Image (cartoon, rainbow, N blue to C red):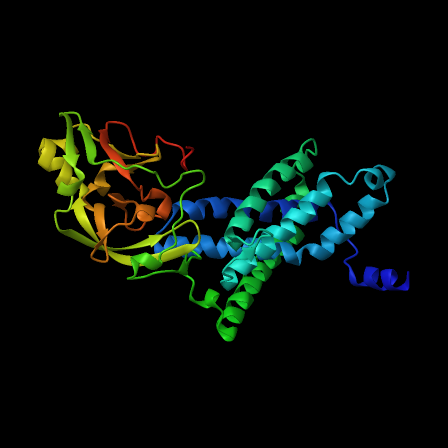
Length: 359
């Protein structure tokens, strides 16, 4: 009892609605930047998003004393003692999300499951986040909060600035810790990914998006479709000697830079249908895998991307997209379609697709 009273003296005296709103705001920022980070692969933008994501996640820790007061107050209510409900699930999942995020940032190789199969910290982080979103919706559903004048008063603005500053400072402290201790996380890319297999394609992890799997059979030809018609190009004819050094930044949390070889996409299209293939009402190019996985790129990217048949001077392996895959510089791995079976020029914009593959 004495210990409980001593702990109570260390907790803030005031906590309530604004504390909960601050927690919700940090959760939304962390979740939003996490999703955005899967799509953005450019160094500067990726870095800004990664910093915001990490700071928002760690900022949750700063609000623990205030949330503790809120929870203690709620537990005094008989209904809350009988049925803790979503609040306790929310607390547990948030702890898992933050801890797994920190482990990934530190460069932890994986978390071992009971079966002995290693599960990456990032996989736990993403999985727990999906569960957290479901529980968060259940927790806030029906708890409508109308805006109040005090939400924008001087005290709230100062508290918001302090929380933002504290969150960034805590993120900077952890980054300094990784560097001081020499953990693998100190060498993360701006997007948060760890280096795995640069200039050694065989050392790159074999990862796919969600339920996508390495196909047992692959295409021997690639179908090319445009307004002028359609054609089939043998995979063996796609090694035209076009070379591109590009960095693959996988959403699985790793990156590798390789020398890729194959044929530029604009070259392939103009050879098949002439220069009008890229100008005649064309707005986007859709690349489809034998597995059904597909992504669209703006037509302007045709001269920047490569249909690759080789990496590091060697033919692609099955796990890395053989016989042909897309290489898309400055885009995350989710855009690098593997096992390409069809390339189609479309008269609809590239944004007219789900933000992430649904298949």
